[in-house]
Image 1 (cartoon, one colour):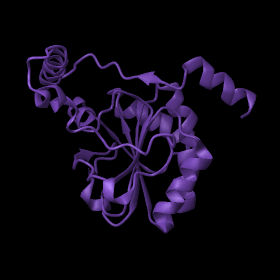
Image 2 (tube, rainbow, N blue to C red; image 1 turned 30 degrees about the vertical axis):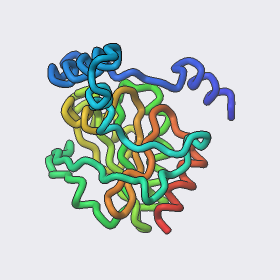
Image 3 (cartoon, rainbow, N blue to C red; image 1 turned 90 degrees about the vertical axis):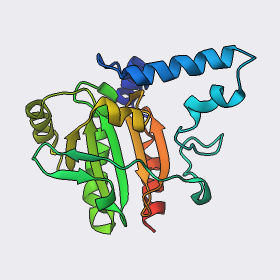
Image 4 (tube, rainbow, N blue to C red; image 1 turned 135 degrees about the horizontal axis):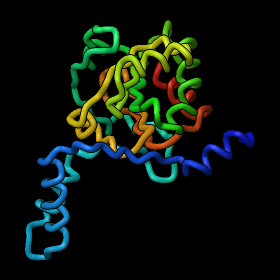
Length: 208
């Protein structure tokens, strides 16, 4: 790990909390009910667990970058967005490809650490079946995003996300990156800056 990387990682603590001004009322209410349920021994266990029932699957403990076993993967939530060039993006249109879904923002420092790596992945693996989609979750204007993309030489598709999408994918901190297999199932969900080498290994494994 070089000095620049270490300095960035320590400064941002490898975490970026997503603080949106307009959070869904239903989402907060569900979280509140779940918390009360867990504190009340007389309430059914099912109620206490309801808020966690739709949580994304995770890799085996002790191996934070390991792919989720095939039999344990669940389908990624479908979505329809319009990218910053006015084209429609849906999850289903990438079925049959390995998808790297990056929840990021121009003003997210950790996200900008990863962007050059993802640009390199896009160049290296696009023709081998990798589809990379960036979703800006800070609600930044398309002009701001386009300007950043031009400076960074980002050639993959980017759309502006929203609170509803963030809730469906459990975007509570950024960067958040998902790898979705050719069958549309979540193979990896990682919050924070990824390990570039291991993440590339995971992409290569999914492309096989």
